[in-house]
Image (tube, rainbow, N blue to C red; front, side, top):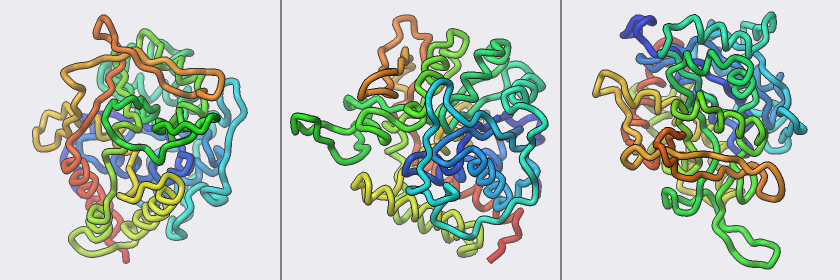
Length: 369
């Protein structure tokens, strides 16, 4: 298949992910991998896995299986760090199933093995520095342990990359006027709006390793290069029944690949409705951290616009102790050089782009039924 653009002209992307981890959101990374691997403006140069609600070995196997399913087994996968910086790792096999990717038995066994001859963090450094300065992006869709280690040990990478995109955190306080779930009761019986998905206050990725998250958000070399996609944004991207039908059927009807992804999505939808009481359809979180890289694409037909309310920038901190551990706290940057946190995006364009990538994957995998 013609990729439509030489790899040298595409944006180099390293995806740090944890397929099967997002508490109650087990299948987000499959869609992020699909988008990063098949968008014609992106060049997925490598994948690293990080601890999550499935053990690292299973997250790594899941990444390999997804890449096998979408016809991209050649993309290298490196197992990263298996536990948070200074906390106990958390797993949730009772929620996700023993593999961490419940909902389908159609994912193939990988034909390739993870690459373990080199530390994932060292490989990230090498791969990113091998790209022209100011071109590569890091997308982090899991806990920030690998990413914090990379940028702490190798500050030259912070200076070299074009940007860092993170799916994580939750702002609340009517940042975008969306609901992330049913209200919760405090110890006095008072009802409050929910902010997070792991606790009433915290989103899972940040909660899982808050020390690493704080290190990333407060890195002075990274602040102005970082875009944060919190739950306040991702909960606008509901995969409604109409969207589900579009992604399942495409133009030529359901294929094995589309059926696999649909089964993953429906498992997520049922769990999300049961736990959070949200029945509009499951929100797709992780792919948005990839999609934001397309905002400045030179082709207007490719761009996906994310609205940051006129260039708002934020200082981001993370609570490390107490019942609100993992909560992201934001204050508007006084010098305009903080983290970018969009408030909305062009949702029709996002869904159209995801469908285009699914169609390209169908073509590569031979429209298998």
